[in-house]
Figure 1 (cartoon, protein in one colour):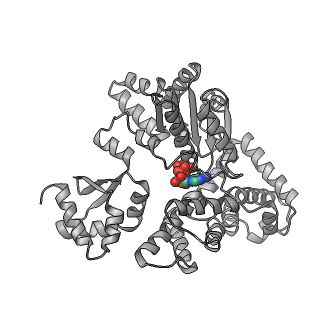
Figure 2 (cartoon, rainbow, N blue to C red; figure 1 turned 90 degrees about the horizontal axis):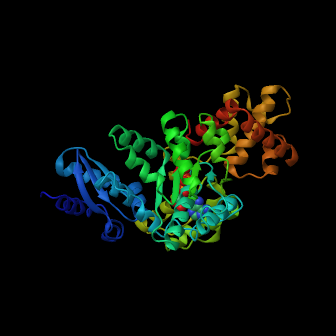
Length: 439
Ligand SMILES: Nc1ncnc2c1ncn2[C@@H]1O[C@H](COP(=O)(O)OP(=O)(O)OP(=O)(O)O)[C@@H](O)[C@H]1O
């Protein structure tokens, strides 16, 4: 038993005592053993859905089987196509090609609602007429709301219309790492060519370049070269440029030259549509009552909605369950307890803001006009609006039945201060991060 393929066959034999034959053939058929390095077993899985499914359900089984065979602990890593390309050839420029060719992240699979319609329309316009209207396009918003999906959709359509288009996709932190690596190795011109000769530059999570002087300088020149030669640039970030406190001013102004489009958490109807769409894509029909139940409970982002549906499918498949409310509740609980994944509720957000200002909840919810209470209340209203989808009227109800105009005014005040006061913007960012990461 030498090759990784042989070892994998043995692992599969062991798994047969715990998992049904159907489960194994359904979920492991696209899993290809690649290599074992330093007690990590690497697989390749071109199907992102199956990859996620295996990662959430079967990693422990695989690790245990490996431990059994080798009497040693193993890590298991499943590579998607992009990671596999990097694994095989770390500097492969073809890294992300398969993603753009995938039909999973296109405009057709993106559900449009009030929370993302501007970003969607702008992304479509950019893909149909690159560099004609909005250059750069910057899409910003919290995690899991479809920013990367829209980037891929742009690349997908541009590639479809022009098979020869040179598309450069990079994550902000990879841009930094590649810059450091290649400059240090004396291969700066290779790095520059990679980005400055692109027809379309897509930078995901561009906020990471902020605060790194040399990287910002490099990015500035890349931006100018592309912009001046009429090439489209699309950026995503977790916040608008006005809130990137460490960003170089000359980059900030450039980021704001084109169009800024935000994505917010989807409202109830959009969540329903996303749930039904995702379920249909997986060949599962969900009754309205169940879809509605999920849409009511899982409000923060689309990644959580997807996770919930994947779990439900897993229960159905593994336990032969009907999809009833109990199974759904369990799926939601699982998603909530997964590290870093939470659904903020108004209570939770108010709790965080109270802790930050060191004040009692009844003060923030009540009528007091002292400065901290007023500001804390306004911030809490702003965060609830941004993170939960409650309507202005619902938010008013949380704060002693204030009317919707008062809530709207409070939220606008916070938005204005975020734009004019970097330190304040930083506080809001920190509160958001803390709430999102359950700290
Ligand atoms: N409106 C939508 N319609 C359909 N699927 C969506 C929508 N929004 C998000 N998704 C799906 O949710 C998942 C998370 O989205 P995505 O990776 O694009 O988020 P993101 O905003 O880039 O988050 P992060 O900043 O954490 O990278 C993806 O699988 C994506 O396809």
